[in-house]
Image (tube, rainbow, N blue to C red):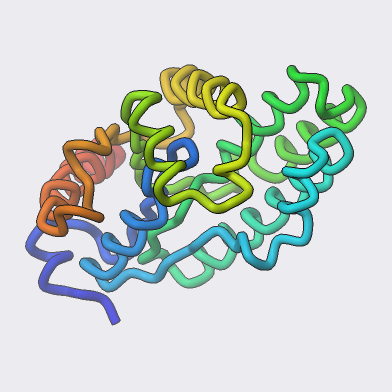
Length: 226
């Protein structure tokens, strides 16, 4: 059931699709749940526990990288289809764009995914997502902070397999995320510092986030109407 009062208060369309992006440890799931609860939207969460490749991947990157990325792509594409079949009103934990723009490319550049596998994966992604028919979110909220902030959160809240991963891996991913978001154009972006908008510690900060979402979506939809 949508929270009509908050949708109307902030001017957020009831059919909006809000996607949360950012590297591991920035609190995507936390803000996803907080926004969904505030607006009465449905959630679209990463299905980590049911992923048959994740543990295997962290144990052997080279062997399981392609399997993992194709699994994520298929699951996110199905979820994106479900979101728009419902007619919107969703908050989504992590975007489909991060899979190819960061994770698959990083694995390929590191030699942990073969050139053939990477070409196959990229071709599949472009055929599924990079078309005029693919429904893009209304806005992507990008959660960011310093590398030390992110590393601290991984150590405090991360899954065991994440906590046991070499720091160099997280540092490279952090840099790639910064490069990716600076060149991202698939949908409008709101950048939030995780120290200024930490809904885990300060639940009231969600209202500032709602104001930013309403303003950004309003700007975009007004431009489309004009």
